[in-house]
Length: 458
Length: 169
Image (cartoon, rainbow over all chains, first blue to last red; front, side, top):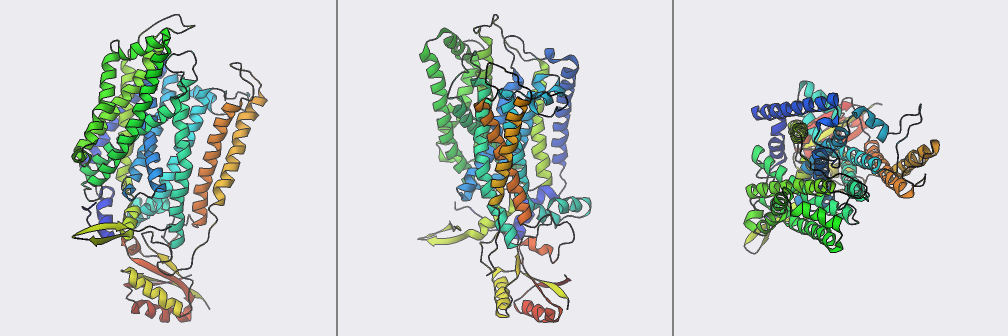
């Protein structure tokens, strides 16, 4: 904690608003590349809509393919964002300050992208409205609330709406700073978005209270969303490998594992691109890595229980699924990559202080985690469906079609596009939070060194 | 007699606190402090503010729960169709959707509460205001009768105000 640089409010504004107030060529390059990929994915989707879902690689018995794997992945990524922000806010952890908004915004775009996937998967997308929303009063067609496919949209809708409102309301004071520093059309836009914020005592009091209240309200939603996603699988009694009571906590902690890793990746990129070494410091990566060691080990425990109990049953169907996941090509190869990148490579690295405090090593190790966690979802979904189940008369294998691959690539481009655009128009590090940290911080001398000390209101 | 709004802009916290103390000595304790940083409550000796934000999530939760009950029970009763051998009003399923509806209502109304209690949105000209506030300066705003404008302006200047703005209320 010794490497802090004291900055004035004017310097904080200058540093953190630089991406918003200056035009940079690299922004247009990244947006151009991402928009092109998204457009190509849009073309793939249009082809799927015209031709039907037969252009996907899914077929009996594997009716859930790459798109559902990717759906679970993005829901997982979306989870740690607000979870991290909410828990750190409630715990009043000082090191949260530069990380919270990046985490929340990552949640927003990852969840928005995830929500598209079931619609991409189903085909005849216009009919999705019938299945999810109770709107067809004329014909009396209502959603079947007993289906997990209605639980899922209700949970995701709540989480997405809550996250967008959470991000916006906590962004208002920083938008006011932008309002005061822009001219022309952008000034008008920021003036409307700032809602007339002046920063009086009552507004600040409510703003801080909103952070705490909304954190407390969003945390239970966060837990519910991935629990409900897990029940998409767990309530399917006929599929070996899925019908497990531990799926809800297993999915939630897996989501936290991949989500916190993605926040680390995002913060490392922000630090590097915007040269925010004074704001996103090695101590922040150190704290996140310590958190990750605990989360990853908790997740690994659930993984071992899931597989271990699967084997312990000795049921032929269950054993066959586990064999497909771990012993048969390509499952065995994917399993080794998954378990290595998801756990056995990063965890020993994160036990080393030099690695924890190195943004570059943290970037790569967190990226590896998400490669592993994507494969985890593949291993969980595909082999279970490939095996013959009771009342299923065919075995089959799944190979993704180019259309599905394009849609998956497009989803990564879409999230990147969202994040880059957000960073261009809004401060991605909450300025007032950083300034508050500065107000509450004093440097005190203990023995021969000066150390930062922080006092806190009740 | 008409009132005027005055805003003294101060570079340092201590200067703003001194100005606030001087206002209190003159019997003016109803002043407003503007800043771009959430200072701990009471730093400037301002009056504590009251709000009813805590009520909003409860109202929202109640409304959200009611709407969710309507969606889950109401729609199934409107077109009774048994699927999967489950009861028409399947409580575990209803619980999930009602839970989400309740939380959504609570979150939505918390946001409405914050906006309402902060007296936002205010889309016209911000009065009194100075863009230096978002550079780290502290603003002390007060509304006084027109006759007292010079007296309060001088008070702000004596406390080392960098600017004093006077606006009609």
